[in-house]
Image (cartoon, rainbow, N blue to C red; front, top):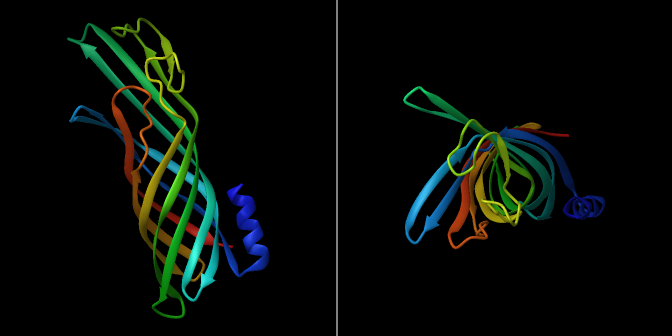
Length: 203
């Protein structure tokens, strides 16, 4: 729906289509009555966006991207037994960002941005291999199974802010993503956060 809206804006206003890729690790922070534990997951993303001029140097960026997150951990008990678990997440994200740009020269422009990112978990699994206490032998846990041991929500809304440096049609950007919603159906409060950096090209 957001991409359709971007295309509608583009047909009636000056707009730029961009293609982006980057590195976006995710930290999942679980707050259990004040005791916070963090788990870090490496991640990458790729997507497109339309940057639509609103007025003057103020623009609205609408787009869509897919984030792929994976992490493998191993452990052993005095070298006698080993276990391995691999987590894989695939999220669809729709950033809606206001941005304001300043031309430093004919080729170079710097912009700052802030807004919201609407995320939806397409897939989330942790595969266990070995004899895992409380789980057993080889098994797979679905993060979005309402009757499972994780039971996360698919929808995640976060706030994002950062800066973009554009040189001709190439751009380098980075920022911070701060989760605003509790993605855990349990009694704990679970939110996501993390930095992101990327490169892109304006078509």
